[in-house]
Length: 119
Image 1 (cartoon, rainbow, N blue to C red):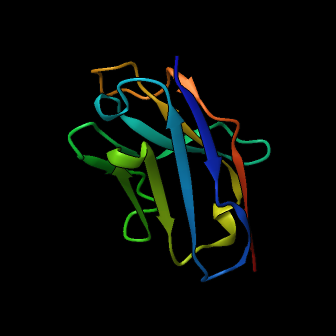
Image 2: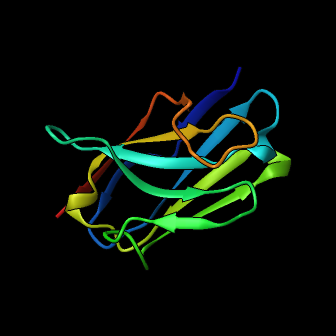
């Protein structure tokens, strides 16, 4: 079993930055892909960024050049550095982990952290 806990959300002005953390407990963290998703009110949950066990990253077009995903396997933690934030980035952000040895997040979910960007 894997437990994921997000932190780092909050209220920030447009143009500001936040760093989200996703701390994992359980086994085989380094062999799991982790994704950051977000869901705005009335919208579907969407993938923002993901990182494989090998460190390959993928980003939604809307965040490319502004967000950076990284992982620290020694700390069982994945980060999402968010710069140049826009009001449209406002959402609940979730991290999700894959099954061990696979590259598709969605097996395990955290409880989410709220990010609000004011204009």
